[in-house]
Amino acid sequence: MSEEFGAECIATCLIDNHLSDDWYEEFDPGFVSYKEYIKSPEWKERADAAKERAGYRCQVCNKSDRIEAHHRNYDHLGCELSEDIIVLCHKCHELFSKSKIIPRWVISY
Image (cartoon, rainbow, N blue to C red; front, side, top):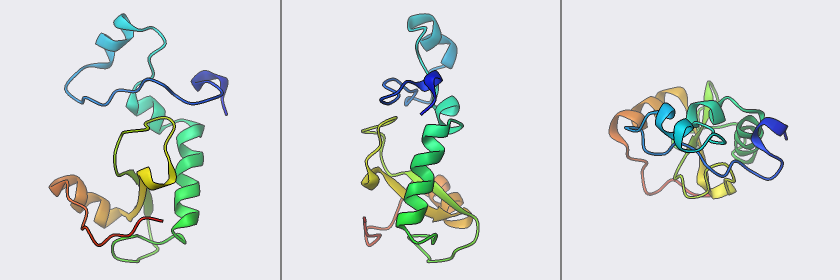
């Protein structure tokens, strides 16, 4: 775990997209933005673990090309549980981003 984000987890991340990172940095100098967190080694480790658990396949269409980790929720942002992350191929990820809906039949692992 990098020291930049702390040994335990990232406690504070930007969830509300309409607020700017600058506002939070003024309010809390220890703040880590969501965009910064997504680029961190901690997120990469969690995303890679989710991909491995999913067998390196999209959990919606079962394709194995261009898979990406996606937050199902932000309840544990920075300290994600395995069930907080779903693995999607790029196409399903784009479809979800447009509709904001993941089919109910998608199983958790």
